[in-house]
Image 1 (cartoon, rainbow over the protein chains, first blue to last red):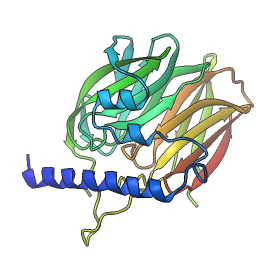
Image 2 (cartoon, each protein chain N blue to C red):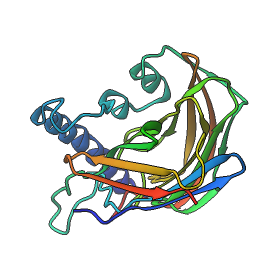
Image 3 (cartoon, helix red, strand yellow):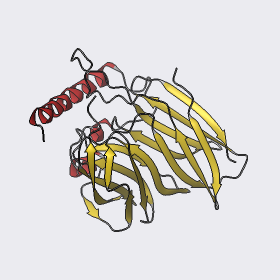
Length: 156
Length: 103
């Protein structure tokens, strides 16, 4: 592991958080932002913080959530994931990459009639645990899976 | 203006499976250019899918979603010939809406 690369990633992470904060203050809510974007949740670094930013308290581990992804991703820039939940009344599905600069990668609202099944692709900076977070009937559940990355997706 | 999305919507049993490929840089804000100055973040934040005026999926994305994002989901209540509309909005306020017919 190359330590100067570690420092670069950390420094860049801090700069982004500040950059986002500056942008958020420049753009007034409601103008181009007809839809909401939970900035607080996207700034979080860990599962517990994300759950809190989404209005919950804690998340319980559940076997009813499934993550389908490669065990080893050769290219961290494009890692495909399928998340499905068998928990009744699933209303939200989120994907977190524990060791990315900001943990939360994507969050999906599942209205009634839509299957609790989403498939997308995310970037991973390094080998990390992937967390699928599910909100069902007001409660939060999660499951984790480790994905090994051979080539990181954050560099140039 | 961003390139059009590629949307495929097809029946999968009694459900409609929608697959969307968007064309977007999804710049994280973490990278630096050749002079060492940071490249500003530019990524899709919101994605909404509607069918007959009803929202069937809405998503909030961070910059960790891959470049040229792919998204796939399934919903019930659709039939061949119906339209599915997808809209995205990015962090600079740019928008794009495209629609596809369920085949």
